[in-house]
Image (tube, rainbow, N blue to C red; front, top):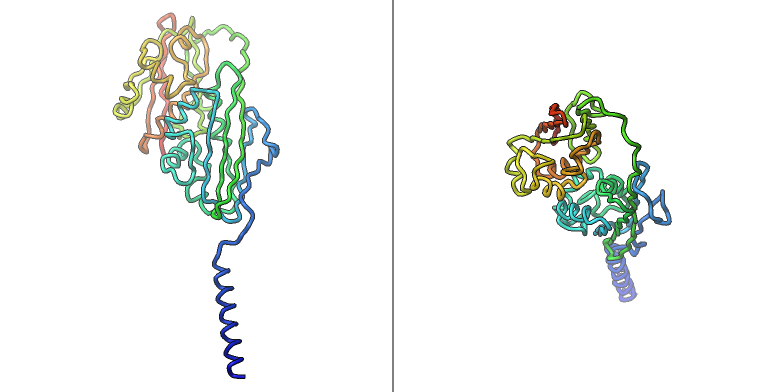
Length: 309
């Protein structure tokens, strides 16, 4: 009997040991999934003010890797993307450069530790995608975001989100311009504005008889930052070919040269220039002085102040 009881004790210990080992293994749970509540069939959607590109990423075993591969019909957009992130394959967890750049262009988008090992996250790429509209060409273009997720069990899934940009409709001719001026709609007092992906940085410029000269001056403290781009702290947007070529790369949506000269009225959006520069700016306050001269040699200036937090 004693031997029998000893045998039972040994057997029970073995069972407990086996059970303990099983408890320490990763559960065989469902693999990751990606859903888009406002577009469950992942149809192509147009980028506009109503865009909702909020994805939900679920991974019961925890997210190990999340990579978005970007493809676009717009060469300008792809060139700018790679200049900002250093790649068109955005690793949101392991690539430090991508994570740092996201803080400037899409600060609300989770990355790094905000994604790693999470079981469910809202991956809202709306603000990031809306940046594409700044590079919209004169023809309809498609832009693909293929999101790849791998969990801690090695299981993977991917989805492709396709976004479309369409050329802006031609506006009716402006009423006769009677004033040469620089205005900031929504910020009439030209109060300081913090640099962010959703900041208000669109100015309204009017010039009697058309713009003859347009010069932007930036602080001397930015001189070293501008040199690699072939720029100086005083930029002539109409007559300096080096400035025109440089801005075509880092702020392609900004009108320069013949797209600026002679215009009597235009909306000047300097957001892309500021967001590109913002990646390299130290925290502080920066003044940009814009000076416009019209065909009658009347000159007006405005000072726009931006804050890098």
